[in-house]
Length: 259
Ligand code: PGA
Image (tube, rainbow, N blue to C red; front, side, top):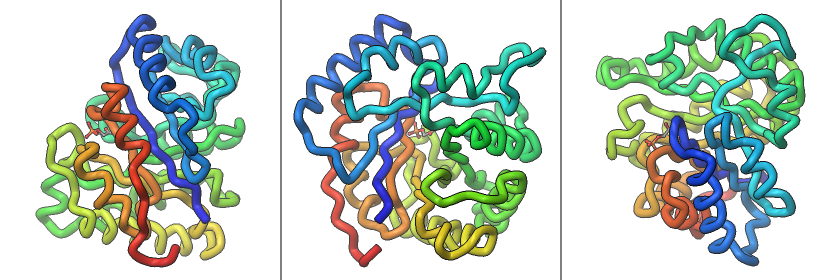
């Protein structure tokens, strides 16, 4: 059984004061809520990680970083080491996000190095893949997603399954208010699982969590989570308000099919 995963990607938002305020509200709402079947992860900017680590001690919330280098230390101006991230209790790292690919020119080769690098240091990569609108219109969605998977995972040869997360994030759905329909997401996500079983094995692929990301809201979460290959969500805009993200994180999950 895969544990559901709810990840809030704050992107370049929130000062220290705002981080403290947000986590105060979120933890207050969470109270004694049972979240045994799921993990809730926050990915704040680097500057808020140490503070968030302190505030989240002894709570079920965990931390992700929004990027990381493949080296432990060295002359890599502007980068951050997986070891430094572990020092502030980071467990997961979002990699290959479409904003990294499209605004900052990260190639599949760079992303592949990052994925292997963070894994090597004991962090769990959340690898984002997804097609642009033109690619979808040209009928190339599955081709693009397969290429990204094969190239970005090429250095990551031996995994157990629980130690990798894939996020399917169609570029046209990110920050646009137009989410993929549950049917569209499931079509690609079941394809991703099939490709993972070719790259690794059926046993491993069964354990990898595959998230959907792109305009997830408290209104569409329940429908999305019904799909058998949607194991959770990566949320941008709607994770910036503690109340909204909380609503998403406590969604009642009723799967249509046995998992
Ligand atoms: P969004 O962003 O929820 O604002 O569409 C998702 C993401 O970029 O991970």
